[in-house]
Length: 429
Image (cartoon, rainbow, N blue to C red):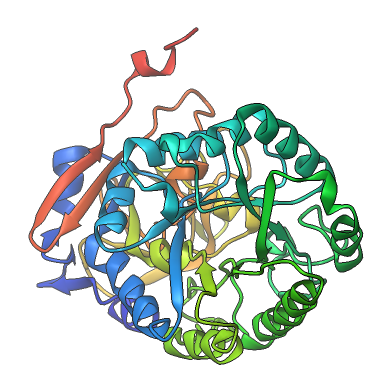
């Protein structure tokens, strides 16, 4: 189990006298105090990659906009804001969370393929200043935005989302940069729009945005996409558009599977070096945005869950836990791998195990056919790398209350979201 932590480079997690700690807080004590399932986040693990990115992009004028769809807790947003990070949003609800966290409009971009009229109005009028950029994904959205801007008597800063038709070489559900996918506009579509830009007098085209996918482990597809985008920006500049910015999206992969040698995480300094080398000569007023999500949040969180029962059948052990696909759907949705380790080490003997939840679905599992330490009812397990797309993709399926969330900083912990009650489940009905 210690080797798993070492291979995943989870320095904020360690065993002390065979008990698992997150930073300097005992995991078992958190489970006992707050119950399970329970999300726990490390402040250090959030901020360390952010500081690396900030250092790597220093030669440029830049904004790092955390993709809050990966983790949208208000206290996390406030923590990142305090440490110089902006926010990438994809809905009116996320803009609302930004407003509650007092994120300045200049540090927010709005992405998303299906923005509604009310969401676009929200972005235009966000805290009276509007936001840094609305990343437009279709001609219909452009037409609607012009209509709203004219009515609101506002000039709107936008970028066009460019789909460069580059394969990110990731899970099909996580790929967003191919022509066959729903995202963005291809080169010809954008060029055709620029020919009739007089129809959009209240929209200021600042530049382009891209995002070719998530969980990318090779630099080449990102570098190809960046170069393609730069060349297209220069082409747009030649057509008379005052190009001032590019939004490069996110996508850096994080390591989930300690035994998978194909999951070779890209170096953040190397990633920053590639960006700087490509865009450093775009002019002193040129601005670069990036949208890291799981790069900051993925390895920062764990999901604590308790063993309810052990069941044996055909030489296999089933550990039935109180955590489920309702709290962490990634294994069921993507067949995603999450390492699971015990909160207390109690020997080295392992057995072939399925770790399954109580939800009435065959797909409700967190691990299948895993060599796992023998465990007993009431043992606490920690599901690793659960900080991204865990709580934000959780559901009330089977009428299950959502878990509490805890933020740990050194030897202190605080509740940043209360556990839901049964009464919470029927509010509004």
